[in-house]
Length: 335
Image (tube, helix red, strand yellow):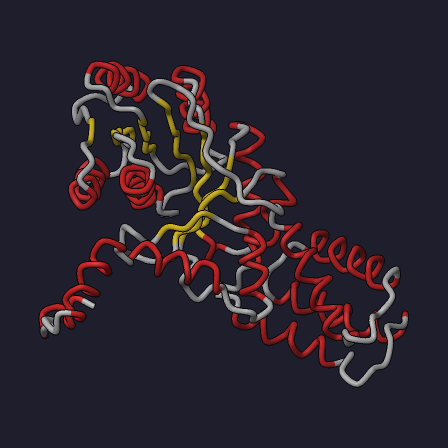
């Protein structure tokens, strides 16, 4: 996703190659290029300017160690500032209610329904929760059917009332059902809406007040670029959501939304959708994303993914088979 930005930043740092020390002139030249690269990647202009000003201030205040070249030092400063720009630390879900309630919000087509399924799957498999999906999109044709298909894929039940158009009544009935059947997380999927649609914005605002969710997440398609930031701000003014979800991060997008959205709405990016499959969901780690942007490769996420796929018990069993010379082609295929 950040391929273009990575290339541009790499070229910017080359200005400092061969320089013996950091000076105001070579830093200014490098950062002019960095700012252009950020603007090209669809980063908000004010965010890009503040970012480069901060980097310049830090770079000028640092002594270059003999072991570190000026270009390496600049990469380090930019890396740390990028991580800070995107939130610094990974933000967790705070699910304290019994049951805990997660309310989804966002524009039409941003990927709320699919993400609801991915989140339910993650909570079920990784946190051993018992989630219930709730269909509160009563406007889009086949929205309830889509959620049911998603629920079937991940093995999570879906509560729906196809003939009811009152989303608050549906949500309250779903909560009663969740308490009766001991579900510990309720994920409420809502209709996509425009921030300028007063009636629809009132509906989701009233729904939030009625069910008092532990987490309200704003789902945004990262391919909408700069406009995603403006939309997030308008939704936040009305809903005061708890976190942002960026979907379609695997697409051909310039990625500026990921870098701007945190600064503009001062709410953390909590999750990213990285593909079509129900497992394609990651907790958003700002430092790791900064690694990727600067072309360092996200090794930590790769290792974690490998660990998830690796079964220690199975490995011990295979080790014994190898020692007894009984390792066959079926074992090899499994590996």
